[in-house]
Image: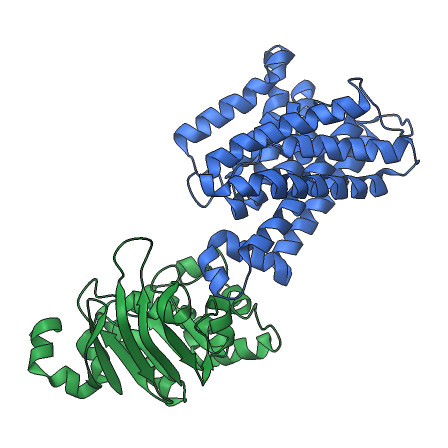
Length: 233
Length: 287
């Protein structure tokens, strides 16, 4: 499905943040990237989505090399990236946010929007509300819904539970599992590493821009060394 | 009492005319994040283009307004592409200062071509209507009706068309817009055409009311800017509300102050708003 190999990237002339990180995602998987602060997890996701220019490495999506494509090209290749912050249009209504999310591919917008409402009834009840009035959890669902409006083959989530209450975070993890059960593979970066690994098929540990460890999610979550380093015990 | 009511009525009429270029200014600010002072000259360009086709080719008010939109939009796009867009990496202030230069250049080009004299539109002369001691000219009513129709059209465009929504989206969050397949620079150019075109129409409407000369737009620039700041720069309904308030404020001010102090209302408003409530009445963000 997704094969990102040896990615090198950074911002400007400073030292590279990614120094050859590699990630694979196969059909049907939830894959979580964990690592210490500043390890380059979000940059890795942005580099895959085409938001950070690559200085090395390749990104292959469903067998097609998208390394030279920009964010729009990668979106057309089936990648949907949900940013951590500013991931909705705050001054527009929920309905307008969903509608405008299909700007690049407008045919069948209404049917797709109804499907999102059916999946997330809380959004259906707020369709006329301005996005900035939503709670953190609702806003994250809207952002994911906007990603789904592009009919992606792979959903990239950057710290989806950041800033959410424990209850809202739990609900969001349930929504992620439900989405994955419907057949959509998911690649995410998460601060709540233990909870995220528990629901993940596989996990990657990234340290200073390189792969440090990888394995099935539950095994990583149980590894004493990883628990000690990243999971606070 | 009647004097005050007449001043308020006149102010509302003028305000609706100021609202059109103020919409253009605020739309450009919302998407491109800079204050385009050349909007004054775009209004003058629109006014002279309309005057030309009205007096030389005999076109009526509506077709002349369309010509004004096209002329303002075209000149705005050329100025943006040749000068302003290139300065965008240097920051909003550099672009705003350059737009003052564009304003001066265009104003003097118009002076060079059409001369310095006052020019009047070729309109049927009509008697003012009177009711309850108030006077209202049929021409004022017609221009106000056109202004309201334009405001409604802008509102419907932004609210209901796919492209209008994309414009609002890019104004709100350009990064997310890009991620979803919008091209912010293309949307910016279309916004410039729309904004400068609106300024052009505003120029004609104001010219119909009185007469035009190469300074027509520049003289109104302060009121237009004050209207947009008062309503909240970047807010479309704010520009309309701000313009009507500025229009009424200016008319009321000249009841107690010499007419030369009319523009002081604009200055005072800008000063007060920027120090007390920089986001304006309906604005989303501080300037």
